[in-house]
Amino acid sequence: MSDVIQLLPDAIANQIAAGEVVQRPASVVKELIENSIDASANHICVAVKDAGKALIQISDNGTGMSETDARMSFERHATSKLRSAEDIYALHTLGFRGEALASIAAVAQVEMVTRTQDQEFGSCLEMEGSSFRGCEPVAAEIGTSISVKNLFFNVPARRTFLKSNSVEMRHVIDEFFRVALARPDVSFEFYQNDSLSYNLAKGKLSRRIAEIFGDRYRRQILSCQEETPAIKIYGYIGKPEHAKRTRGEQFFFINQRFIKSSYLNHAVMSAYEAMLPENSFPFYTLFLEIDPSEIDVNVHPTKTEIKLVDERTVYAIVRAAVKRALGTNLVSPSLDEGQQENHFSILGRGDARPSATERDFSSKPSTSSGKGGYRQQSALRKVDTSQWESLYQQPQEGSYFDFDEATSSENRPAGHDDEAALTFQSAANRMPSTFFEESGQGSSEHPFQIHLSYVFSQVKSGMMIIDQQAAHERILYEQYALALEKRSGVSQQSLFPQTLVLSAPDISIVEELSAEISALGFDFTIFGQNTLVINGVPTDIRSGQEKEIFEGLIEQYKHFQSDLSGNRKESVARSIARRMAIKKGQKLDPTEMSTLIDRLFGCANSDYTPDGRKTYYILELDQISEFFK
Ligand code: ADP
Ligand code: MG
Image (cartoon, rainbow, N blue to C red):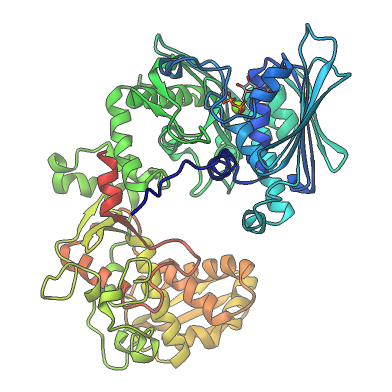
């Protein structure tokens, strides 16, 4: 056979490289602004049309290029920023790979006008799909202006993968904000379809933040500073009460380069500890200055990932700095604290931040305190344990705990027997026996509980972590929904009827829901405008509890009613499930844990609580092994 291997022509090699560097218009914006900053510009003008699909133009007042350099700059691996491999570890520029211009020119029509201080005329150079189209002298200001037109004009597949203009524009703005925040000492103008959207003057970081996010941010942020011989931190963090529901406004810069790091994000979040409401994200813009020899930015072509030589120290210092800014750093932080939090980040992959509960429990040595420790906790938390037992009652004849009905064949998704095809992603609606290690019993083996909140169980592909409260909510919700549907709630007459005095609006809620509440097994009569007498309760509710459950039900119903569009049965089922579910802080014995798991996966939808919180999370084996690489 004759030889078959050939070198790829430059145009094709560039187009392939462009796949990594130029993913969308926003990537072009990022690379070009970074080039301007590397060229020492202190004023940069960005203009985009059609979300960057038609035009991206970046003009700067930086050093500019000679004609030869301008032509060279479009060659692959052509850079003025590196001379030797060691230079990567002493970088003071954002670029160094010499790939951006070559990649951009491979997938667009590019025009560059550039002039240096000691040239009388500038050069205007045109490129199209990696081919040189011409160069001529032009009158120009000192600096560089690059126009990128018709991105992906020669790669139709990539063009069709672009999202709508509003989505692509969001990405462009995100990149713009990142550089603009990184360099408050540079002024920026940003034009969108010929209208000026941002005009950012040079100034302090706090002013830049206010210009980008709004003036009110001046009152919502706290200065954060820390300096050690190894690292310097400065920037601003949001006051906890202004945390948002989305995590958009969180920025880390290492040596003025925007980076993504779930590890350092975790350091910040853990410093806020219990100060944040659940699922809320504080603002932060934090700058870290670290000796370039301590970091490796050459992890990915987009250079937003970074390797730190001494991650743990950086984690501990970031956490301490944020704590201090929040005024909560009463004890000086030790590295141990950082390491302990690291444990959490492993479990949650940066998503699960330690909740107040975890924090409280983690400060108690669980083994040495033993039962006493737990008792102390439960006293503090006033956990209502009495409801718990009902979860494990054997199904009674005719009672709405009869789960066999809920999981009867018509509720099971097709393909139930197809064990071979099972993966965890698709396992949501299947029975647990296909899920767990072969244990003979078709159930989880040796589940255990941590921090009295989460149940861990080994599964085929790794480790399953169940949020006990969320899981129980799902179980109860399906149970009550079924009872409501079948009107199968069984009532048990109370020895001593309970009288409840309610407000008139609450009584009217009870009237409105009387059919549903009775269907669950409540037996009650309304007297006058304010009084309710409870004669009987569902069999799984202990006497003495009825008042509390009833009030809780009304309260939760009011809460859900506001975000549900009027399905009463669903609201009632959700309300009572929420009220009755075990909470964090509740100790479970092994049988209870196994039952919880079995019943969760007996649910029609085991993945989420009725209001969309996840009930369990699978930590895959390869994720685990990744931690140790
Ligand atoms: P890198 O930034 O990794 O060096 P690029 O392909 O982005 O690679 O740019 C290639 C070279 O072109 C840079 O090293 C720089 O010398 C020059 N260059 C690019 N943009 C500008 C600019 N706006 N002003 C001056 N020089 C520039
Ligand atoms: Mg560059």
